[in-house]
Image (cartoon, rainbow, N blue to C red; front, top):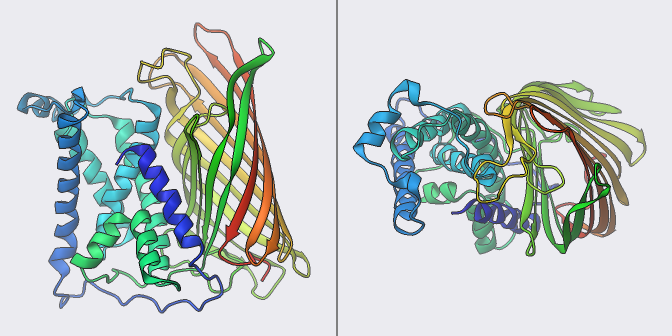
Length: 469
């Protein structure tokens, strides 16, 4: 599956889930503990993901050899021998979409092959890492890439767990069985396969936390203003927008538990088409943390160590990073049915990509690469029955240290949106996005671009009330 096809499958799967997930239904009991000594499927839980990963690699290799005729797929014993040399590791220069979304989605497939076989989050992360390592060493004629190993493992684990939990919640939800199966399969194809191969028992007690889903359909338009010339540099005309928001385990919901990584996560994804296919995906998930405040009480929240995967692809701001850092999410009740919800994160990324080199589109790498910092603040003023006013600020600082040119990219995006409930989960809304890019690199003039985007949407939510419990 191509990166764009994967993005569309994720978004469509979440759309199918939207109409089926009921936020107020009682949670299922924790899944029984498995992998005891008398577990008859113990060996299969470890072997099945290996076989599925190898099959996935062989299928991708065959496709790239026979259909697309890509040079990197022309492997030989000599290329394998070269890649096994530890000195062969480098930073590759593949296309932005391939490196920053395609590889994390590939990692998510390996992760979910293990996760849906009954293994834990950390086992799944190990399988994602080993799957990436096998691909770099044995299934590419190019030298193994350190950046691919990082993004595939971290981004794939975060994306994989979010999709795994959303699909599991959907399978156990209400609604027509065929629709639930379709949505769960689009979100987690490996989980759908393993539901037939391996009895779905978990390694640890995990309660599926309450999941809120909001799907949006509308129109978007954007343009970039180059400050030096004071004129538009890049325009994207009005086109179709498909977007989804998934929030699992919000701390203001008393049913939320934090017994495993990503018990709390939020995933935002959108896709605009057809004149110019662009998209975004942002995942923030709690790895280790604890609650604060009281329930019931005016303040309820959670803080701890978060994992973060960002992928922003529009012409306005192009930035991607995987990282870890401290963060928090909490709700403060201001008045009956009126609350302020706050989220924040500061992360350190071992590998990030950002900006544009303004080179020929025929060249693979047209972005800067290096270590980076990412941070975000999310403020939502929510009235339970009427509206949600949201301000999201994200910032990326990327140092171009791994490959020339040396320098840095500073990218800031601010999104202000309003969603008004019309009737029982149906809403209408709009969003304005202002972005700022400042870049300084050796041998080139400093760059300053400002971007603007506008969105108008109709929304469908899994519950008419979000938060404010």
